[in-house]
Length: 216
Image (tube, rainbow, N blue to C red; front, side, top):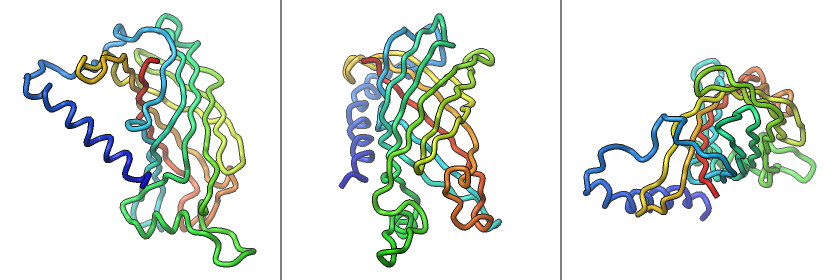
């Protein structure tokens, strides 16, 4: 049932936006304008925050999947971006791919009581990312370094982050302030004790993050 929550939420958002389309809004409520960001604490929007992972599949093609239902908080002061702090939780059990069979395989239980799952297994622990520093690198850009905990291992990871947009939702959709970012990084699975099938499946995994936050 949970895997249908994101599509359902998206459908509700489309329905809610229909009157706005009918009214012919001049532009989207979110703009790539940092002046629209106000300081405070923001909450991750689990319906619109996604982590895409991509690896090399047997040397023939890239393959990617998604983690959704991400939760967490962002503390932000536009006058001092270097003081920003972010902490998020990524439910590994919510992994999804274009193939139901592959998604099921990623979460499959061991074949016997003493065996290990090929990948995540049926009850994988959530992954977390907690920032430790933010270093602005240009207009709307920053390197966000933090501790990534995955598969029982914690290691520092740096996200190349870009401001995507900010603004207020229309009154018909709640009127809350929103801010969004994109981020990328590359990790090695083996460093998190997750080197299954290397090098048939690449050790390096590219991560692309779409992060949406709503002000509390």
